[in-house]
Image 1 (cartoon, rainbow, N blue to C red):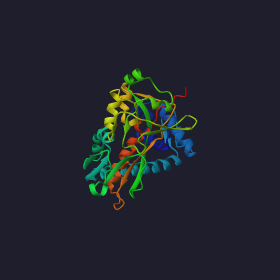
Image 2: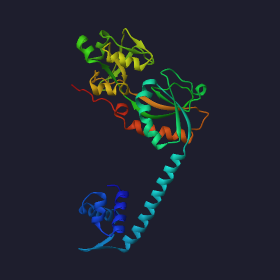
Image 3: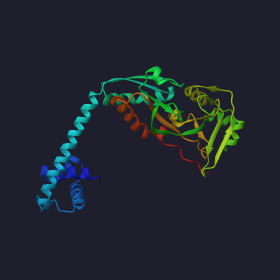
Image 4: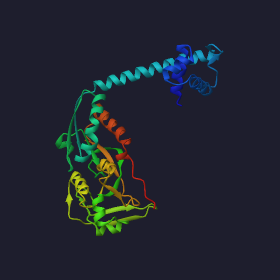
Length: 308
């Protein structure tokens, strides 16, 4: 248990005068509270309370430690209040750019919680799967999936997007399931034209050996949304970020295949204009979504490898 939690328990024991009251507050047992105080005494290296069968009193060291703990907790509470007040005072319009599917699936659903934390901010979200010129469009911050070209923009990597090879059960039933990347040449592969290597799909096996295969198919699109829908319709196989198909995988509308072979992951960056120092509102937006994405299994986590 962390030291701050133990300090809070100790302070409450001193201020309430008994262990049972603190146990009721914490919805735990008196024994558990006593063990927390003992753990703190072990950390401090000195007894803090003199215990008897009916009461307890502070030792000299305990009195000193209580006063310091109270100061620390009061300072921490004041800091929380000040930060909360500062967040509520952050205001203005944020112009944000992102790929279409990414914005729809992973930015817009998080806006209610974002606005609850920053009620005075406004967001203008521009969704486009093509290249957005931040200067021309007046964009404050843009999400970019994939390796960045040397554009002179200031970039911050906030997560990693893992990819997979995906197909609908209906496609697999009709055409079979490839077991090795080389077998993809016999399948209808759906090509996302926003991928730098349009018709070349790369993989690493469990031992780190690279595989690269040239693929082809009867459908291409510059829209990841269109590729996703084509996969769900059973049209063919895609090589896509997992965040595009999170709900579809869970619902069984698509299946991850070739799971013994991992596509290289894609960096997820936010970029800013080099001539603009990120404002407090931009920093708040980026920090909020960076934390959110780091805990999102559709973005930050990868599929388990099939070692069979």
